[in-house]
Image (cartoon, rainbow, N blue to C red):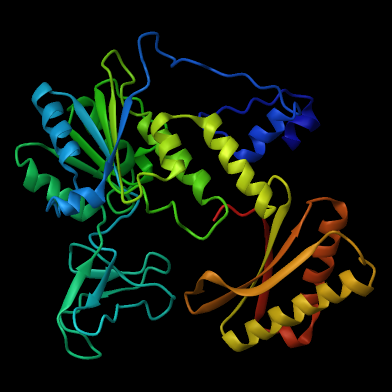
Length: 396
C-alpha cells in the first residue's frame, strides 16, 4: 500500500476471504469494493458441502478418522476415476505420546510443548527441531506409552488400509523438505491423476485441478479454538479456501467438513461459503472485545534464558507504561496496558517469553510511546540478557 502511494499506483487486493480489517475499509467506502459472483470458468459452480458430526460417528462405533459419509464419497470418486483432496492441519503420526498409567506426556526439554510422534520412531519438536527415539515405557512410572491424536502420517496409513489399491500422495513439511518436493508432488498428482492427495494447509490454497471433485476436511476444530482473536477468521478462511479446490472444472464438486462441533457458526458459514454472514457475526465479536479493526493490539515480547528475570523485566515495563499514562507525558492517552502474561508457548529453544499488551489505535502518538519504552528497556543495565521486540496485530 505504501509503495502504491509513493509511485501513484493503483492497488488491487483480491481474495475469496478478505481480512476483516480490509473488508471493513471497503464497507466504510475507504476502498472500492467489487464482488465476483461466479467462478472464473463458465460452467463451474461452488461445491456442495456437508458437515459430518464426529460425535455421532463415535456413538455409531466408528473409531476411524474418516466419517462414514466421507468414506462413501471417496469410494464413489475412486470408482469414477476422479480425484480427491484431504486436508488435516497437523503433520507427523500422532500429536503426542503419553503414559497410559500416570498420563505424563513426553515434552521437549528445550520448549514448552509436547513432542510429536513420527512414523519412523522419532518424537520431534516442531519448534526447535529436537528429536529423540520413542519411549516404550514411561520414564516417570514405568507404564506403557500410547500415541494420542492424528497427523498426516496416520491419516495416510489409514487411507491405504481402507483403499489398498488406490495411490495416495502426502504433502506436508516432511515430504516437501527436499528441493523441488512441492512441485514434484503436484506434478505427479496432475499428470498421473493419483486418486488422493492428503496434506496440511499446503493443499488449501491456489491449486486448480479440474478432476478434483471431492474435498475432505478431517479435523475442522484444530484451529477454531486457539487462543487468538484471529482464530475464527483463520478457520473460516482456511476451510472456505480448501473447499474451493473441489469442482473447479465441468464436474460438480462435493466437500465434507468433519467436526465435533457442527453447530458452530463459523463452520456453518464456511459450509455455506457465506462470507457476508461470517463477517457480520465476527465483526460484532471484534467490536465487543475491542479487537482489530476497532483498536490495534501491540504485543511487546520480552524474552531471555532466565524466566524470573524475564517476568520481572516485563512487570517493570508494564508499571512504567501505566505510570506514564496516569501521570506523565502520555497522561490520558487512550492506551490500555495488559499483562504481563506467558506467551502461548512460553519457552522456545530454552528462551522464555512473556507478553505485555497495548490496546490502542496505531497512530503517531502510540508508536512514539512504544518506541520510547523499547529504547528505555534496551538501555537499562538491569535488562542485560533480556530482549524485547514488538508486533502490531500479529497473526500468530
